[in-house]
Amino acid sequence: MSSKAKSVWLVVGAVVAVAALALPKIGSLRGNSKSTQSNNVAGASRDPRMPVRMQVIQSENVGDKVATVGTILSNEEVEIRSEISGKVEKIYFKEGERIDKDEALLKINDAELQAQLSRAQYRQAIAEQEAERKRQLFEKKLASQEEYDIAINQLNIVKAEAQLIQAQIGKT
Image 1 (cartoon, helix red, strand yellow):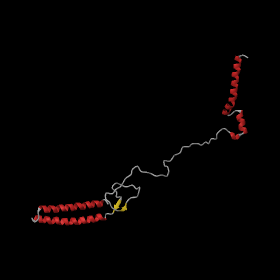
Image 2 (tube, rainbow, N blue to C red; image 1 turned 180 degrees about the vertical axis):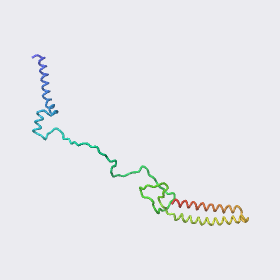
Image 3 (cartoon, one colour; image 1 turned 45 degrees about the horizontal axis):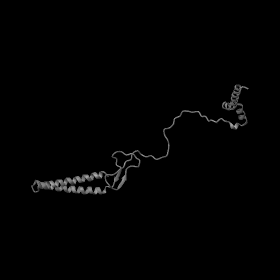
Image 4 (tube, helix red, strand yellow; image 1 turned 90 degrees about the vertical axis):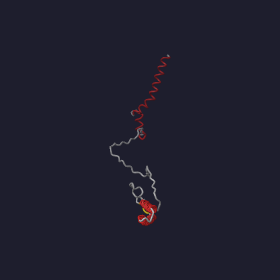
């Protein structure tokens, strides 16, 4: 044989060999080869297909609420301090409750301040009597202008002290 004929037979043989190896694979992909069918009949449990579950999809509303367990931390934190010190007698709010501006939160024991106010009111009454006496004496020229001014100033100081104590009581 000539070298040309050898080459042709070699190519034809290679094509036949490739086709013989490739045909069973192509048939199993298509599902109609004889070897696949005989395998299905002989061993049905070795089905190469995968089982698939199907479900019809329907439109429905999804709720906006999610029920969960956890801890909530606030974005803001407020530190409350009293302007005066004292023992807390009563609390007017519950933890987590909403409160309004200028709303009383606590009642502080103000017994000491009440006693100071009472003393300041007595001192004010005495200072008013003293100022009235000095005014009468000044009008009769029996007291100097300076003595009268001191009595009036003393009365104003005692009034201011009483007002200060009343303001502190208002903060309790």
